[in-house]
Image (cartoon, rainbow, N blue to C red; front, top):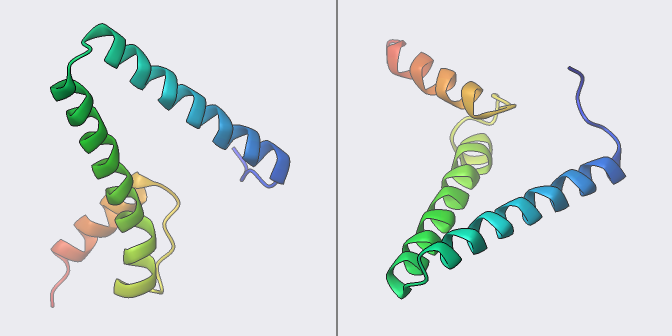
Length: 87
């Protein structure tokens, strides 16, 4: 599969992710409409967003500017490779 290069298709893909996440969150909140579940869902979403930011932006810009990640599997391979390599 080739890289996605069309700006309009990239924007549509981002919008679809936003819609899917919103619908999934709303369905979870409707299923169990408690403040506790809503807060836990918000914390989980926020934490995963911060991890994604860390995995790509922080590592690439502050830890190892030479390595470019293309996905979370590449990030995991990078961590394993760094762990197994001698200091």
